[in-house]
Length: 429
Length: 131
Image (tube, rainbow over all chains, first blue to last red):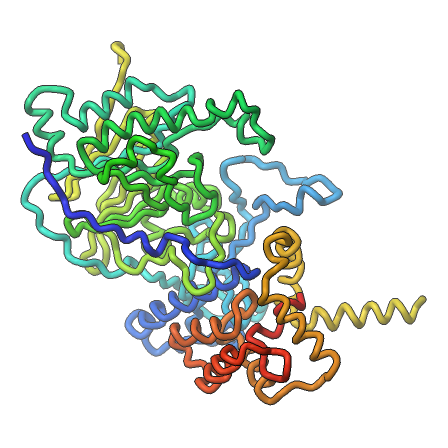
């Protein structure tokens, strides 16, 4: 039995930071480039969606006159944690009701462009939006100086290339949140996954399915390093080998995988990589065994690649987790859908999400629509096929943490159908 | 007492005349002190400081420097702090904002001269090293 192959090409150049020199720049550059890029897209939409309406700037607003404004949203939030609160003399009177979410009924939106800012009212719900999103708004200025919104124009899904027709089953396996080294990690469970993928498990039928797996993507948080080593103090020399233990264990596991098929590994928020997005690839030296195979590739987060011309884009979950903190939706897939219609992977960066201070680009803008959009380290497995207005089709996948759920996600390249690989080591469940 | 209070008031007001830069200034100084060991030998900074010093002495600026300052202050081409004038021009050009083309020649010329002390315009923006 022979394993199937798929053509792989990485599109990660935009997320790698090379030769950048920090010159004291601040984040204003990112917002400027984002607004400029998105305004070009949104202005092009206005003639078809809102004909006969003038596009103006905040400074050019006239009271009572219908117009279209394009700008960056700022969400004013009462409960948003601020570093200054720690230094304020009086203790905050507002208790954090829900520590995982900073929403409050008093939150309000403000629209900004180069010329000024204006408070928004009317048909725009603060709960659905976050700071950093660029939108076009139809409405008029009220006598109180607010902008009364009648309609919101979002950029919508970006243009998409046609889905290639693949006439055989080829699978990609996504696994996330392995947390090697944590108490939740079950080595047997992971070993079962590896044996299944490499074809050492099950009957001929199962092996035939396993031979169709063309790639494994490890979506962040692969190791768990005990918090007591990360408190900023010097680690005693006798403890130093213990920090490396989880990584060495992960390397042994990954070596078994890369010996039989290509593996991509992305960093996550718990991994030994930089904190701010885009997270740079984990260093090859961490994987002494696996990195000797050319099937091993260490990738940045976000990660973008083509597999047999099917376009993939994905993150280790920080962008969606941050939207969950600052806005509201019925499930994680809806957050993912919004990032696609806003055409921005991480709109809350650099406001509440760490981000490199780029001066000439905003790498998180989504210029072409992916076919598969995956997000790791979520609470549960969810998936949906999103249909765009111009016949775009995107498979959205929320990948659960493997150490909690024992679930890996398998995607069929032929029809973008998704299924789970579930492993349990308990007899009674 | 009262007069010195007024002086303080006026000086503060003057500094805060352009609100955007003054609000940035606090953050920026913090970042500078944070990276002092790295940024101390930064040649770009020292040259800007020299040009700043010479400006204070002469208190007049060349025609070219005046044009470049106008370019710095034009918000249409984006924020100017943290990028040098040439980078900012290139960025504006790449974005299709059509910055004045003679400024590029001016900046390229002064960069090739490699001497910013004798009247030729500074490669750094107006605010570099001042906030």
